[in-house]
Amino acid sequence: MPQTLRLVTYNLQRAIHYDRIREHFATLSAFRQADIVAVQEAQVPEDGTNTLARLAADLEGEYRWTYRTVMSYPGKEYGNGFLFRPSVTPVADQVVLLPRVDRLGWVARLKTEGGVPDTKSAFVQVFAMRGRRVRVVSLHLDFAGGTDHRVRQLTHLLGAIDRTAGTDDAAVDVLCGDFNTSGYHRSKAARAQTQRVLDVALARGFTDCSAGVPWTSDLFSSIDDADPAHRLLAVGRALGLRYRQKLDHLLVRGARPMASATVVAVCGRTHLPGSDHVPVAVELIV
Figure 1: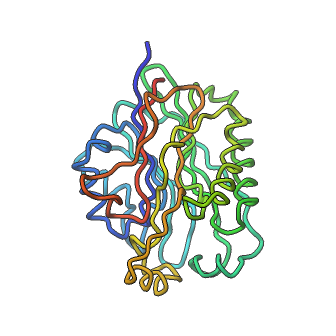
Figure 2: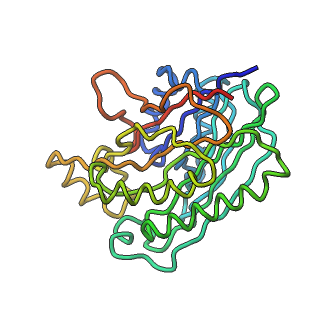
């Protein structure tokens, strides 16, 4: 019997606006109805509480959570994870370490906390859903290294996932998160480079559910004080600049979307406050 799986992917921008994010989860229907929310940039501050644990507690038991570290810095770490409802049950997981760049170019140094290449990994969680197995990958590809490096990372990731397909027998694969496919969303060159990255998955049988979403991040909309470029970004915001990019994507294999993925929004706002990314939601027939 076909069933509906509701899924959201959301880069929380290290949860620097936690109260806003909690409000979204508590009030917006896309989150209220979601079976699974794949999260990037959850934060664990020194002597603090994991963002996902805080959300699960504040939402009074509506969600359970899982988390894996992606990047570590003195006194804090950031990672990927999942919030999920009782409609799904976690049954297996996998962490895939991604290739790392050897050095940072000047633009990457400007945007990379700590000034050295980040570690990157993808967190794969297999869920059981009324007799079906759904494998969801929450990923955060590298900003550094350009398109060639992101192609290399995604190729490595999908190779690792496919090598385990025979052991976990996941019927449905969902690939979602921040692909860091940077560049102005109306630029033909940026769209072509983005397509090069997505083609790695499309060649392996995935369908791009979020192709109709024009952009998912506005560089100047929310500024993290820990960002090495925060002063420059603050100048851009003061000037009223917009730099919208299609960074987040949602692809599926082994299921079909009920409709194209959509951005989670509130009436009268083009960008949901709380992060420099917007959530992307889809309903799948599995």
